[in-house]
Structure formats: structure tokens, C-alpha cells
Length: 139
Image (cartoon, rainbow, N blue to C red; front, side, top):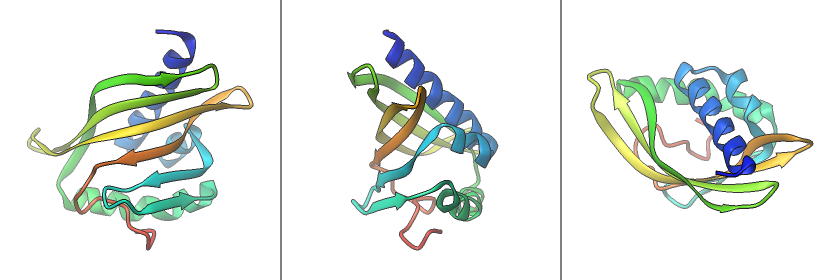
């Protein structure tokens, strides 16, 4: 694994730890803005600033808790393309409930960029479906 892949992967796992802790500040530290996502329904979502992400955070947390979610884990993480300042990471994410069962498994592609010397996710595309899918209404 080269340095770019290693650094992008480390950024991803810091983001995932913050996501599972519902730590919005930790998540934001691993993101670049504008941040773009293509949802499981092929809807393009754009968060132009950190504030846009903060506005959606509580709604996402509520939806996750309504699913009995306890954590998201990642498998099959691999770099599918890489360069000195951009890395494409493909992976499978597993949403787990309080009983420890995977209830929502989906493939996703994350694009990490190094900007001003700092790695962060700039773009995501997921094949996720379910109530915790983020909608265009920001909830």
C-alpha cells in the first residue's frame, strides 16, 4: 500500500469511528466541502459547507436509532484507483443493530482528496436503501 492509499484509508477509518460515535466534529474533520454524494436512488446531494452537514446530523442520528442501529462496520475495503492527491476507495458497509445482526449491507465508493496537505472525503456514491438514507430535504 502506498502512502496516498494508507493516508486516505486512515482518514476513512477516523471518519467511521466518528460516525459510529455520532461525533459530528470528528466526521467534519475527515470531509472536504463542497461534499457530494450520489444516493442509492441516484439522487445527487451536495453539502456546500460544514454547516450543511451539521444541519443533517441530528435527523440522520434519529433515523439510525429508529432502525435499532448500533454501528456501521466496513469490509472489503480496497483502493481501486490512486494517485498522489486522490484515492478511490471501494468497500462494503454493514449497518448493525443492537442484536449484532447486519440489517443493511451496501457497496459504496468514496473519493478522498488531499487538499492543502490534508486528506478527506470529497465524494461518495452508495447503493444504500433504507430509512437512514439521507433525503434531499436534509433529513
